[in-house]
Image 1 (tube, rainbow, N blue to C red):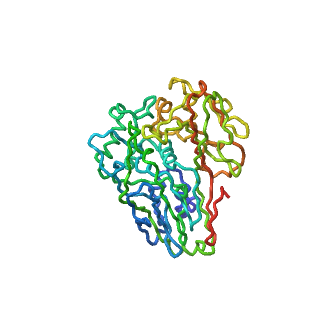
Image 2: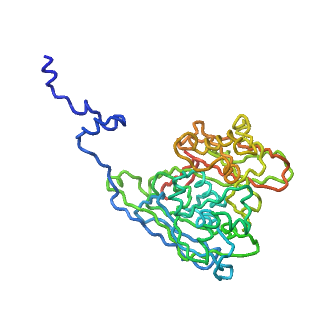
Image 3: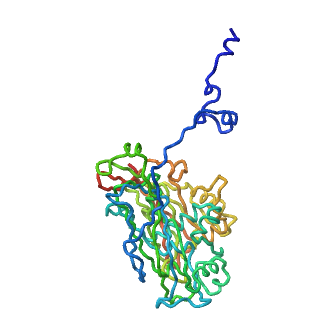
Length: 457
């Protein structure tokens, strides 16, 4: 009887379970699994589309560059994560003459993207973007704090990510600093002699972080607004005037047509409903007056409709974003001594964070920064060290999700009141401004050609 049982054929899957159920170290199952493979359906057609502006660039620092993606009769879907901006520019004197040899002028980090102050988004002519300005600072902060060291050394080099030398007071641009700072020197070579600078960068659009493709039958419009050249150019002489001339600029994105079976399962573009969940990031400025030693910034971020899942606060001097002799991408503590966030009057963290003068003494502050930007206990680093954090890349970051997931788990938004408490070493002799970047769970609803934007439904 035992021999009969042993001779009975046993299904292969009972011995070696499918790859979905087996552990990652079950080498025997993977080597001896001879079952028929299965393949996912690919798109029927896909193409890397070049999208031209409505009006080609001309010699104007205030031209609004507008692009349309898709349309009512357009049957292609768009993967917005592949969206790129490609073009060519030159830095000239305001009168159109080229830069002189060895002229003392450089540019900020991530220069091509920094020449745009705002990117307006419209779906079927309905505005979607937040009214806050300085999208280039938001983009720089996101790439500075969220990108790993390897990405900064490779991928972001294509966007001209070249770090400045880290030293106290490095936001001030002087002739000596232009000669000694390797970052400023390297970036000055990019624009020296008014030579052509070819650029390609991925714009930081809120809708582009959605994991769902932009559907066919709708029109997505992007409007690129230019920033003042004094923001993105750096020179010791504030009296000199320059301009940035864009000669060519197009968008590139991968667009595709789904398989017939997928199209049957999708909502009808004219009668169905499409939901596109994404993270919306807002920028706000909060001024702090001269003479205060302790200050409470009320309602640092809007929580009346939904609380943000993350808040990041950067102190800036009042002239840092408007003077050509100031580097807007240098963030220092501005003599902050203690700080904390107040959620419905409850302190986060329970004991306020205290900044020490020596970088090696700021272990608690630096650890809080790492934990609230997603680089606490893993094998990836954003390359920011304690000394650089204190003198060049300082920020106050707060992850408001209970599991420190930085919004990755799509938590249902709650409402509340967010205030910010800060104490300085001494009463302020110069007014400063807090740049507040808040991230919210949002959802774009497209229904029967009608467009509405809500916090996570």
